[in-house]
Image (cartoon, rainbow, N blue to C red; front, side, top):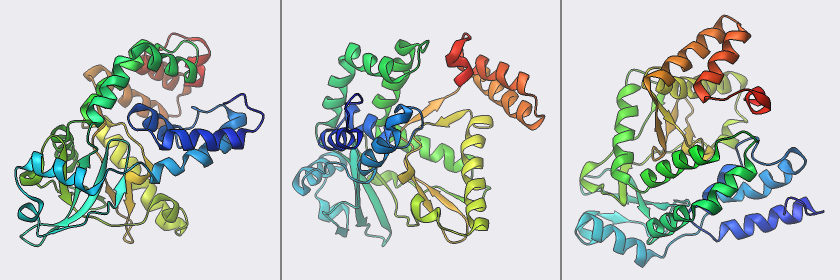
Amino acid sequence: MLLSRSADGAAAQAAAVLGTLRGLAAKVGQTASYVDGLIPEPYREAYESALSTLRAQAPTSSPSAIRAVVEAELGGPIDRLFVEWQDTPIASASIGQVHRARLHDGREVAVKVQHPGIDRAIEADLNNADVVRGLFSTLGPKGLNSKKVFSEVAARFREELDYQQEARHQKFFATLHAGDAKIHIPTVVDSHTSRRVLTTELCSGALLDQAARATEAMRRSYAEVLWRFVFKGILVGGQFNADPHPGNYLFRPDGSVTFLDFGCVQPLTDKQVHQARCIHKAALERDEVAFARHCAALLETRGGNYERLV
């Protein structure tokens, strides 16, 4: 489709096709809509515009199917687990969808529930390793170790299917940023969380496109908070929150940001943390030679155009 004479038409078709799928295909489509470099420059605008619909819209599962998952996972009927439950999801993504509910103690919560069968769909995708690796080879630059990239991505996808693992990640980041009043991470409700159901406090805020229209001072505050969240996680916590989906951030009027979705977290080795710190030190000192050297060491590149691009 990238070779089509009509980039707009092909992009719209790609969005339509990917929008009906789940698993890796939908995830790749969502990622391509906001990560610069995945789509070749001549086609980027058309594809990013068309595929952006995937960020907000994903196939939803039926109310009865979602209720069945919740009741099986949490061991009881919906009306005993929650005093209020809304069947219409407030958000849906490639792996699960989110419902608004209220606990018996009065707390409003967001309940993320996996789409029924999504674990089997993704595992089937991952088992077709040659097809998926071919996708990375096509989208990635020459010299990219597609086998290694695929193994890392496959590990993160499998972890995303375990909401108890995500809950642990969420608590880790909440503890790491506990002293920062501008970083807000929703509290996990352990009593209503399982492998396929994750319950947290319900939060609200403006989305990225709305935040982009704020005053310069407010946008600066938001940007500084985003920077601290990302790089304190890497440089201090040794954990890279690897899913920069624009919908995972809620921007609040006081300049603070609520961070959602901790399903895709890449643990870093001591060596990687060291190189990341050296990169930042080189940047502060405006030492471009040292910056390039430590980037190459961090990403294990071996020269060539790929390394220059990185």
